[in-house]
Length: 255
Ligand SMILES: [Zn+2]
Image (cartoon, rainbow, N blue to C red):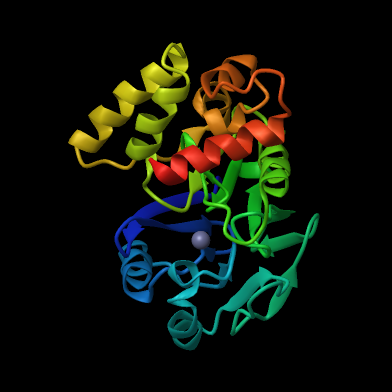
């Protein structure tokens, strides 16, 4: 039986995610922005929370952990403490570790940059990547604690995953990301197609995720900092990909 994934909104623009293994009835929440919508989603499905997989220490990703842990007695998996300690963690996971959610396997990739502790969870069997605030659709997270070369390396780790993997990211920022990306690559056909799709989805009040990693590789300028067209778009032809990435991020911060 295939795993089931549910997506819903938490707080203002965070995504909540549940992944459920029908065989064992194990259910994990990816992060816990706030407890109420996660409890509601669980009750709607008749699922019981067994695990929380935390990606990083920011409040809008861990705010619901304590309440959910108290209610369900679930296991909490989180990254090793780097800049800030995350409370209520039962299992610390790092690069290459595999966490079992029932029969589902979540592989941990350390993807620092947004924060130093940021990890992403890859379910290879389900072709699903939960990248939280490292990789957004047509964007990436702000680099708060790491530096640009570090974030670029993290994005390369995610870009190495297969094209048919689905990206589940931490926030609904796609419309703003598309607007910015078009200033860099106005002639990118994949990006223009994505822009139309995003306009249509947002007008219908629908989420713009998940997206296919293969489509992100073609349209997300932050994954394309080593493409000559992107370097040219920010007038940095011949510079390193990490430098181009840094310039993209700086420009996005000001946009
Ligand atoms: Zn964050």
